Length: 316
Image (cartoon, rainbow, N blue to C red; front, top):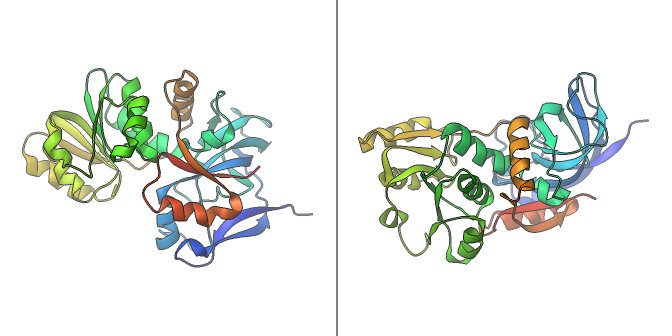
């Protein structure tokens, strides 16, 4: 007899109201995959953007890529994890999502053991956003001791992890955020903060080695102006618009560089992130939680753009 599970799906593109909680057959792991009983699922801006545009996926379309849960089955070829392990990860990205569900299956190397010091709700807030920050700052920029790093939208999902990762690597961290988020960001390790609602950051900041920009638009050209010669701009908002990023860097004529990062599953980075968490050097901020059946409300809240840290769906 086929086992079933709950999953959030949409039959059409549109607003949060298109999200429906339905029952589907429970997926079974294929070779090298594990099955994970999801305890919590993180919500990310890419989720509601996909809900509206569909990206390149066909309907019906499920939602979500961030999970924390327990391994319930392991197929042949899995060597790193076993049934009963508590894991977290970003399964299957960028292929079809489906983390807003009771169970997910994905390659075992898309997961790592979750931080021992965190429960599933806070662990589920980490993978996509923290991996984006890690792959940008550690791998693309090789941020190190004494460098000046500017993080835009520092109070958001990626931003609040970027502040902590840059600080842990010895950088001087500057963040743009509304004034109401400044106390939290100082507590997370930011050295300087600019209230973007009160002033132009380009008038307040200079000599930056790395800019991490999750906003895009005119932030691109303005960010280029605050880079020190040889500095690096990393764009996250429009990562496929590489020509515009390259052109903006060339226009500066000061040897600055521009690139973009598209996050990818990475168990080794998740393990390094978990170590930072367990050492007390990185902590996820969860602004709100919603039960799985209220995924539409979670999207409504996230789309306001005023949340701090992450929103998480709870399943158990």
